[in-house]
Amino acid sequence: MRIVWLMVVLGVAFAGWFWKNSIVPATDGNVGQARKVTVSKLGPRYVTGHTSHYDLAISPDGSIWSVGYDGENYGLVSRLDVGTKSWQRTKYTNRFAMPEAIAFPSASTGVIVARSQFFNTMDGGQNWQRFELRSYLTPVAIDFWNEEIGVVVGRHNVSNEQRMEVWRTDDGGRSFAKFAELRSDRFPYDVIFLSSSEIIMVVAKDELMRSRDGGKTWSPERFELFSVSSAVRKSDSQTLLLGTEGEVATSDNVNGWTMTSLISRTANSLVWRDIACIGGSVIVAVGDKGSLAVSFTGGVEWADVQSGIGEDLVRIYSGPDFFVILGTDSMFRLDLE
Image (cartoon, rainbow, N blue to C red; front, side):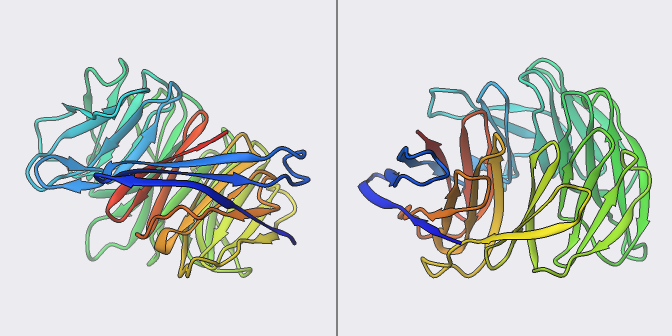
């Protein structure tokens, strides 16, 4: 294993806005070419009565979508278009709906999941339709295989009934059907579509659930290599898991899991929290106290990015050619050149 270090060449901060460029030295993995990593601040994550970014989605056209509850307004969805710095806010419902997650599998198709109700748009967010679930579901995660096929997982929000629920759409979010109820005292916190039929759900630090029939039946899988923090689809045939201490494991969905690398725990990182991928080879992981690492080799070699961010980084999302990161207080964009 070889850790590739980054050398900071520029850092500027002013008026709450900053950017920081870093250079990745040449490695075997990126064929002798240095790569520049740019981290820029998009703004605060939460401002009462104005901003709340609880969950994000990046559309294939590069626009960033966000949902949240800012303490005063509900039913609002925000959009940041390519080349702009101002968020545009519109209503997706006049009802009280605490949003939990958002997805945009295409530039025109989007889904917002809230407690016991979903909302979808087919015209790029101009109009939203409501779909009532008739279930006490608190959704946790959503993922799409393509523009039409998607899955939502969550927990049944009744205190005396401990179970997970799986809902699926095959028409881009126009309708959803409950595919499975799973009795469990554990609840999901991540879901990954591997193919039109195969899905992995992370339900605990040491347990996965796998479906091979599109979400109808599920089988538990004990995972003992490390404590799982996040999962991502690396390619149509490979899944990648991130551990809380920076461990990385891959699976080809046939031969089980293999630990492939360990991210350096510099910058006083306490926990690595999330991971995202572009094109199967460019992977970025984020964690506590501004910990940020990038791999250009599909997770084999990692470089620590000295981002200058002091807050914990909790979520990362991949776009067409960039990443967006949610911190505890702020939002950041990461570009690779």
